[in-house]
Length: 205
Image (cartoon, rainbow, N blue to C red; front, side, top):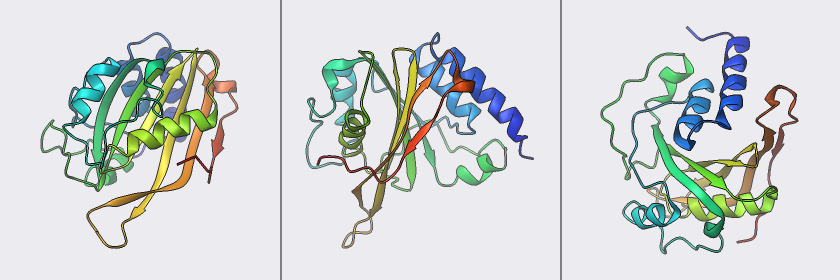
């Protein structure tokens, strides 16, 4: 049985308020659970930029490593791979049920899934283009879509890039120019925040 919209909205609001105080993984996991997304499929890629990038190479299916400049790596203060959500888990989550899990490890070969990444950034203001560029660079490292959650200066943003199937290789996805961003939700007043969803945004390649 699905929970009432008002109940979910209250959970999300409380999770946003606590996000400013909790450790990165706990805060973002609580927020995603409030939105109805949770899974025990995860792996520890490290909480520092150096650890994260080093361990990411084990799972990367891209043709090159992470570009530190495009990813704004010098401005990361902490980071984590939160979890992976596979297609077989989504129907039960939509019904408000506990999903059946086959284990806690990351399935790095399963492209029909999503991974959720959390990043804390230095600085007060981040433009949509800057967040989108980070998101694109991170998505180049994964065979499946990577949804990126950002925390900085008492604000929360989330970015999702559009992908399509490769025309000649059904086992691969291709990144498009479309990135959607929920940007600068104030964690102290999430109920009054103006959430702006950016669609079809062109981002430099």
